[in-house]
Image (cartoon, rainbow, N blue to C red; front, side):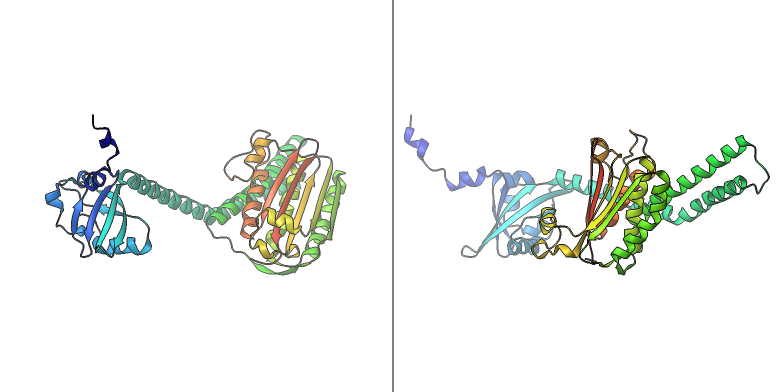
Length: 377
């Protein structure tokens, strides 16, 4: 037995044919000079049929593609012509130039299956996206008709309860009031739902302008104080920690976010304490949550809002999906507006380059925190 033969280096030809990928040696003029066994198998040709042919006869793009791969130093996928085959094949091609030897070394890897699958997925995604865009645009365009019809129901039911059509007996009054109440709630929910469709279809028009943030918050507080007093709920607020009052955002959207979250607290609780506070977040907070440009962040350029309901509780499953628009909060029979409020808040705040979090524990209640920049980013 020739033990010394075990330590002999394999011949270059053997190494050339043992590469797991196809290998071609191409002249600078684009002619194929040599190929390993794997490349011949992939192209389904003999060495005699291949050598001497131009690279472009087999690989779409030819020398232009090779030069691009060499200069950019990254592989590219190209369509390949396979002898006697009607199917489309795609190879991932890598190449490097040996200027001294005046040759280009090319490796081939068959990615036909993955490439076709990716194209199919991309095509299905584009089809689905177009359908969703068309659906959203359609719903936004007909939203006025739907809301107008519901407004008619609400208006006439209110007129009936006010005695416009004559005196109603107690049972009739009860049913009319139920119709009126449900019409109001349906309008409230649909307006939020149509706003989501408008945002998803990029049809929402923002109105960025300068305003005094503290003035806005004080005006909101005045609106809600009488209501909480009537419900005998404690309502506390504190904006003294805001070092900067100047704000350049869409004022109506910021007001809408705060009012919608307060409405969620109201709809889901009957007793307890509601708090609303605003201040400037610590710089460490902004850095921890990876806000844009964190190396030069100033905490006074952001506002942190904290809103808490002491008697409201969301379990882990609800919290996990609270910002997902089409995953309903059915477990505890929450009003539809609860889910839609947090979905909208997330979309609006993200558009402002901010972020929002919801924290909830049984003995603690629910805390909604969100950060927005005081200037448009």
